[in-house]
Image 1 (cartoon, rainbow, N blue to C red):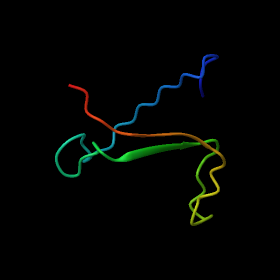
Image 2: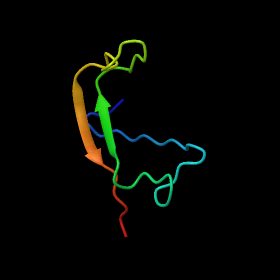
Image 3: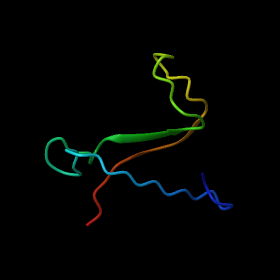
Length: 60
């Protein structure tokens, strides 16, 4: 959920996944849809409207 200004914060720790190295997340994409993904509804997951997307970057 986002606040009145449209700002949302999400944090998740995934074992064995790192920002750099292998398997690193830097340079990969993140996509936010309006609805929850349904793994049974392939190929697009029936996740609704595209809300935002971006590339994960390391900030020095």
